[in-house]
Image (tube, rainbow, N blue to C red; front, side, top):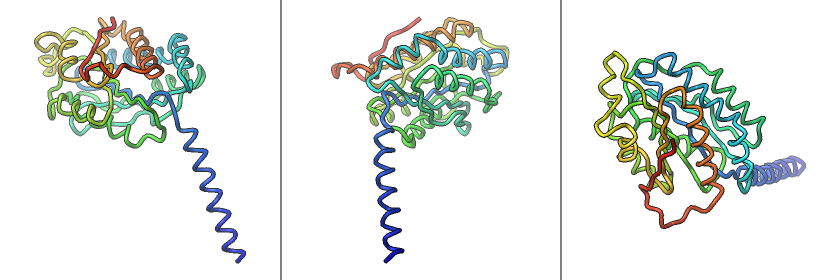
Length: 255
């Protein structure tokens, strides 16, 4: 009887703990930051991209937007992607609720080693991997977003529109951050500037979901400001009701 009583108390403790844990798991936004580290991203571009993300999470405007949400917190994961078989979680799911936790998240981005280098570009595989991370997130949110940044189009794996459509069907929004850059002098250069421009390519093939948009960084030096503006927009959308009349392919450009 004593053993049964002990087991019963332990089971009740687990139930109570689980209830409180579930209550604490609600956040305003689940955000997967999916960064391109394919062959077009040389060392200097990679470092500028990483520092841009880190600076964004130290930006007072981003912190202000985060605090303005109903719960005042989001959860984010940072992944890097390249070819079809190359995706990696660089920073796993982390709750961000104030300037300290935001700064720490940015610091971890800067400190982590690069996942891959010198390979092809599979935006579709990056999106698929982002969906997997959202499915396994330990937090819950009404709004789920995959934030894809890159400086070229898809040249490996299935078409990104196919992956995008799966994400839309699951209620996920995909936003894009296009980095405009000069083509490098190697075999990946033919994929950097698709016909009609990279921003249009992202609008037509990558982004989707309620309130989806493309942000544009004119170059890697302006990436930090672009990602800050993008994060502010994403957090603001999570904090307000997005009109249901918006089409799944609605988009806007932030420059």
